[in-house]
Length: 340
Image 1 (cartoon, helix red, strand yellow):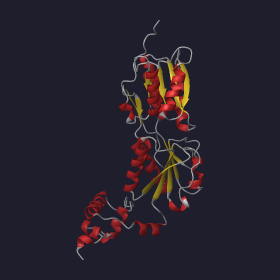
Image 2 (cartoon, helix red, strand yellow; image 1 turned 180 degrees about the vertical axis):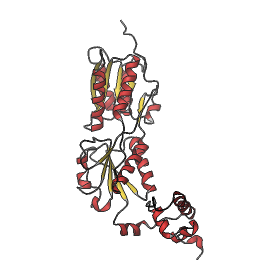
Image 3 (cartoon, helix red, strand yellow; image 1 turned 30 degrees about the vertical axis):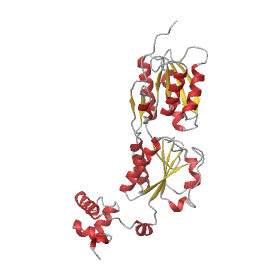
Image 4 (tube, one colour; image 1 turned 120 degrees about the vertical axis):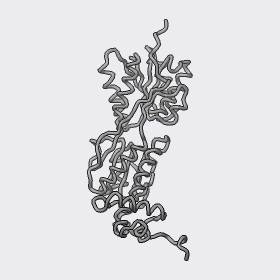
């Protein structure tokens, strides 16, 4: 049989790289550090790529007693943010010979059902984004390693956490609006009982209460454009001085605030400023483009997967929140002087 029609083996890779089969196994199993040099490891990887070599994961997993599969649980797939988290996590997983199964929980942030006959037999670990650890009991039991993303680090016993610096994002938004001269601010809050949204509300309240002369009101809305529109219209037509700026918990809520403002004959940002949080593609589709906080979803997923791999190897994951960045666009401006 011609060589081109046969599946390359680890022996072929070893021959092409000029190393032993043991070295090939160490490098492709990501266990080479401290055993072979970086140059040798790269030579093995190049040979494997050139030969299009794929290790027999099924046989290796039987030897190791592991599935090399992790589950990424998210509340929903209604925004591209979670797609970015998956992309980043899957990229790192693939580099280490792992696969990622994406599972949008049918219950949202509530208790998630086990998507397998037995997750503990089918998986090596779980990544969960924007959920509480106790919502995952049916999936992980008390055995599967767990890394929580965008979750309360004090309420996840036995789980590592990786978070975006959401509090700093809210501080950047608030300082931007205060710097423009806004003092009456409406918080369009996501009506979701989740740590990440509670953290946003807490930081906004803290920042404004330390600034004299500010007024903060809150309107809650489901994370939908129409729900946000309805809540914003009600808030902006309440008797009393109208807010001059709206801080939205995410970009989809901001889109609803845009619709409400236009229905009420208000111009953005001339009559009212609006900010979001996420920096989705939607942010630049709005007119004017939305001032919002950029969250690097792919980096978030990468850091989460690195943390889970560390847990699986018995190492301490790297700590520290992931920085976020305010992106100032056309939806914010100084407030207009009140008209007679």
